[in-house]
Structure formats: structure tokens, C-alpha cells
Length: 399
Image 1 (cartoon, rainbow, N blue to C red):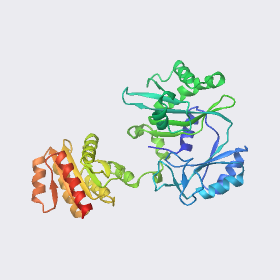
Image 2: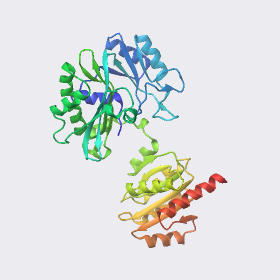
Image 3: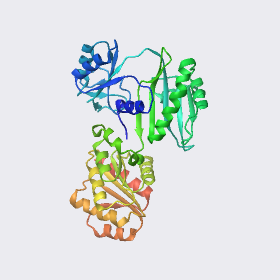
Image 4: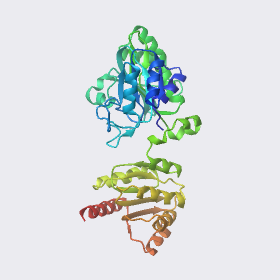
């Protein structure tokens, strides 16, 4: 689950992490009032969306208006806010469709001496969290890793013991910190690592982490995501969720107990098991196709959930064919076929359908398919299924 920058900073502040003062605004007048309340000569007006690249992004309706802008008066804050709120911000991460800005964060201006990068993620190779830092703050860390990897420092830390002070000093030295800045880093880095673990984060990114002229370290940005599987431990985080920022189909799937991610292709996938779903998409791409989604119905889905899965797939106008790939264990093959045939009646499957079944009750399921009068393409294995669904889409495009 992702949250907005201002929400992340509220959580960081509550955990003792230093962040600049800021005020949320949802109208142009509130933005002007926020500037006055902050009381400085300079403030930053920041669009709040679940995407990066806001500073370089531009609004579809106001092509000259950036998503993040410095202002020096309440009038400037009001004018910029009026061009931002309710309009569509397009960034490198939103795609051409962009995202509608409904909330702004007005933050105090700072005397910035240096900009650094800090991020915390789980290292899958070591199965432990790792603190990632770089002297190249304000840049996309992927670009730094590709062009100057020597400027990135990785510091794994124990999930129980956290980052100790010696490790914090090693990280500080890699960033060229000394004096007051180093002492602040020894406090800040372990605090951020504790925050990551205690809140079950999948990502905590501060870009940039700034060093002020006085040696203070402040989180100028905050990009935080939580592990969805751990949200039962953080019921209060439900209030932080912004459904307007999420794909409606993904929200709908979640409510039905399905795992769904929308993609750019034209072959819908309905699979049980995340690993099998990934393999299915790999085989589709291997044979020249493009998957339209990742959809895992899980091991215990019922007829209603599977029927809803078909509805979600078919609601995507890009889908030109569907591949059903089931390895029946807990999820029985005949349950899938029952839902599949029911979907023909209740949903209306209007695109070619390729089905590959193996596992529990597979013979019963195949007999159900053969006994139906539906135009369903059977496959003997996953490779056969991928080849057939790709060929079907190719025929549709050719015609």
C-alpha cells in the first residue's frame, strides 16, 4: 500500500525523524493561508499523487505548470495552486494518462547545503533489510546505479537489532558527513531503519535527504509503501489509503480476494498461484504475445470469486483473448470450469478463450468442457496454451 508524501512525513515525525514544517491544502485559498502560517520568505507547493517525477512533471491542462514549485508570497502560492488542483499531472511514472491532483502540500523553504539519497528496501538475496545511500540526491537512483554505481553505498542491517551507531557512522562517512551533520546522521539513520521495520514497510525512500547550512539532516521528501500482507498489524493505516490513486480494477479485485495487476498487453490471464501466473506471462511473451494483466485467483477461490475475475478481465477493453491456466490443488479444476461456463451465461465471454487444466478433478473438468457447446480452445500444456492464445490474438489483429 502506498501513501502520500504528507502522510509519510506525519508518520516519520511521530517516530522522531526530522522533517520540514508543512501544511496540507486542498484549495487555492488554503495554499495561500498555509504560506502565511509557515511565516517564511520561501515555500514549496507540492502536488500529492502516488507517483514520482513530480518536479519535472507538467499538467495536461497547464503545460507550463510544474508539479512542484517554489513560491515567495501567498499570492504566488494561490496562483500556482489554482493551476494545479483539479488538473492532471503527467510525470515519467504516471504514463500519458497522468493523475488528477486533489491535494497539495505547502512546505517551508530551507537553506540547503547538500542533497543526498536514502532508501530502505528488503534485499531478497540476503533476506534482510538494507539501507541504501548516495551522495547523488535529487536524482533517480536507478540512473545513479547505471552510470556511477561507485556512488552508492549499501548497508544491510539486522531486522531485530536494527542499524547500530557504528554502522550509521560508516554510512555517514560514505556520504562525506562530519561534525554536526555526522552526529545528526548517527541519530537519524537508525531511527529510519526502526521505522521501516516497525511499520512493515516495503519501501522507505527519502530523495532528497538534505543537509542544511547548520548541519541538520531533514527528509525533504518521503516515499513510503507498506507490505500489504502485514496490514492486519496496522489497522490505523487503513485511514491513509487513497482509493482515488489506485487502479479501480485492482481495488475491485482486492475486495473479491483476488490478486490483480493491470498491464499494457491484450491477452487476459486467469491463473491460480502467483508463481504460475508469472510463468504464464513469461510464456506468453516468449511466444510473441503481451499479457494484459496479472491475476491470481488463489488456492481457495469459489465460483463467485472466479466469475468476478472473468468480469474484471473482460472489463478491460484491451483484452482480445483470455488464457486460463489452472493447476488444481486446493483449487479444483471443476470449480474453475463451473465458473467459466457460468461466466458465459452471466458475464458474456466475447473473446477467444484458451484453457489449460491439470490437477485435482481434471478429468471431470475436461468432461464438463467437452460436454458444453461453448467455443473453448483446449490446450495440453502451458507451452501449447501460450502458443494457441498468441496465435488467436494474431488472427484477430490480422483480420
